[in-house]
Length: 419
Image 1 (tube, rainbow, N blue to C red):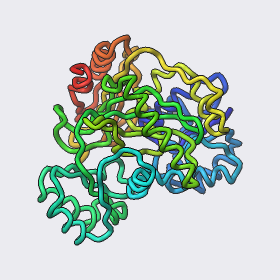
Image 2 (cartoon, one colour; image 1 turned 120 degrees about the horizontal axis):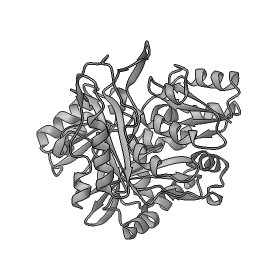
Image 3 (cartoon, rainbow, N blue to C red; image 1 turned 90 degrees about the vertical axis):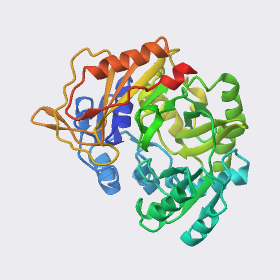
């Protein structure tokens, strides 16, 4: 089978490495891919949002199956166009991808169908939003409605911070048109859990739970990033909580989307907060999380391609989805200064037999040398019989990888170990 994977980051590298293990996959193309992915797939340079380019490439190269991984092409309708051209896809169509594409839509969906989430109000008028903040409890959470590279959420500790966040989104358009509408919601407390799940619109199969580390600096300080590391499974996500989530959140969400005529097929991501009142949804994503994918897929025992095809064909209930009874840790190595200003173009050296899986997120290949080209550069993932084993192995590997300006958090998994 000839497969193409849309995207060019660490998540896509993890998906490609997992697909390579399938006995039925013999050629993989990446659109666009990156310098590190080129070791595992043919990189085409076609942009992840270039829908006509992707369709043409698929037809010209007789592609058998496509995996659309990032949020932008999903929300823009790439699955719809590929499907029209006769290319089967993994990923939701445009109507279903709105669950991530619009936070206003997803919050209203949860309210309508009684799915537990934070109390909220939505605004398209900045003055009304600012007026609401005069009496809203603080801390409060301000979210841009649309996609913002995982950075369109600001936790405001004071009313002044909240007002500044609203103005930056709605007046200064810090996130472009994504901030034309906003959600202001209640600040929830409790451990956070990420649960990725396979669903064909009828059956839903959660993957191993994980814990993301969003803040740039140790001790969960600094700015929000796309994610500085993850561990799996999440120790706070007990069998009892998993059962509650299935009954109160996962199945009701799939059923709600069906009822709205927006059947979701693909990877549905649940960002959860385990509050004193029970689990609540913080956010939905319409795709594999990044960097959660980098700890979840290394634990997958089953054939990823078989699962993806079963999702597309609506027969997920017939396919085994099994995970190793182990732990995984991913340490993200970033360019110093990320998520703000950082320099790129530095050579990356990765020793052979490093004892970990290295997923390349932001690097290019020039004259046979791998050079940094992004904020998040590498995801260094190790597995182990215990969480401590996995964390130790991931850090041991990260210490032996070198590039100028390299930065990574030193406390990934610390909270999980304490739990």
